[in-house]
Image (cartoon, rainbow over all chains, first blue to last red; front, side, top):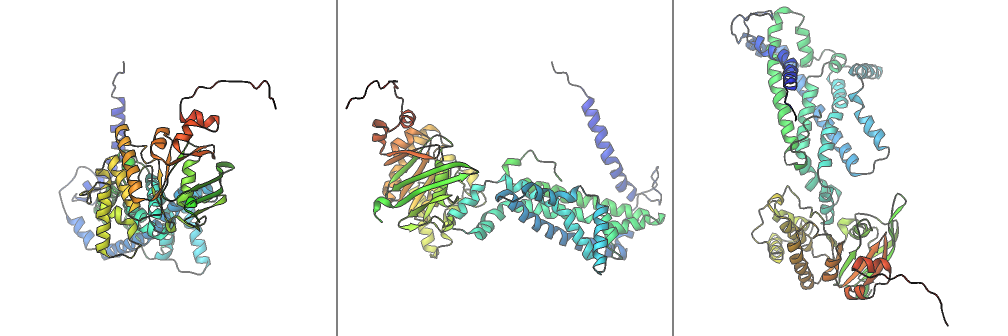
Length: 269
Length: 252
């Protein structure tokens, strides 16, 4: 007889504690009325949030991050959509090789990409700034987008596209009338996830951005001044909440109306 | 072009990586005929149908429909429409928009569009289902929608890829009769793919038996049953008694 034991339960509790307790400290200390992050907690305060809202350098960094994130997510999703269509619908020459090549930024250390790009960019005599940061983020986000879109494209019946052709639509019409609406949830999921990835990316931005700080760089810069720490905690707490919401929405969208992956497919970013 | 050669398939072959899925097939199908391609799975009948639809291009040979060579014509420009095995009803739009999907490219008034949709729904006995979605329909209803969606285009040839395979036995038998009656009333040439001997025998004007990419025999059902021209056809069509014999002597 199978005997139930609690080892696995205890293991998973420890595992989740390990994952989330450090993260939970951020929001807790962001309401603490003291500069140093030590227990016991002093009093409850909103002043760090107030300080965060009134910092103009923070606003600028936030706007930079949002700009980069939006452009990077749109471009990488577009590139990944074309690639996903090719990989799932056509006989691609050197299929494995080109698939691997697109996924390569997953395994290349970011710092290598950063150094390579900085050498290339300055070698061409161009100014560092948000443009090379955006380009590097497109490179970095595309594999994530590709995996999301490929799983959706593989999930739907290719006879639907044939049926559209059979009913008189050309390739373009078939894409807009059938493929696009069916892949739309995955496209939105891909936009959201790549935005989040770009939004909290540090190494590439650090190397390539010159004086145009993105939000993670701003936070890192503030860490050097103990007095500035609490409002970075407040900012961190807000980012945790917003990005978790985006990720949850994107997973929900990814599986909506896709019966083949209703209960599976939770992993994968 | 005579009516006997409405669809003319000559010396058609299709190879997938050295394997011949369709091997030197030549058939003529008459106008208004209910023609079945019968064979075990993997015999090449679906590939042949997909070549007629324009989803696959042949490695050799030619296809012409109603006197026009369509060998290199893409699927969207052919006078054929197809009913898919799994029906391929678009899940993101309702029944009405599924049925009128193929009319968008034809320049017709919205009045005529509505009339034709109503007519098509009436033909398959699904009036009142306009606003349903694919997941709210049974297998049999989906099959009818697929039929209406294809027939509303008024194709010269309707291609059916095992359309009854997913239905239960009782519904399948009903649909066989209904499909046959429908074919007679619209007068469109049907090319019907099946692996079910009984289905092919009850519905068709003529049946082509296929195996390993080749056409073995093309005959009306009764003749196929009574006079199979080789061992495979005889064995595949019905229960036969095989008596082994030896030619001991030939005189004359």
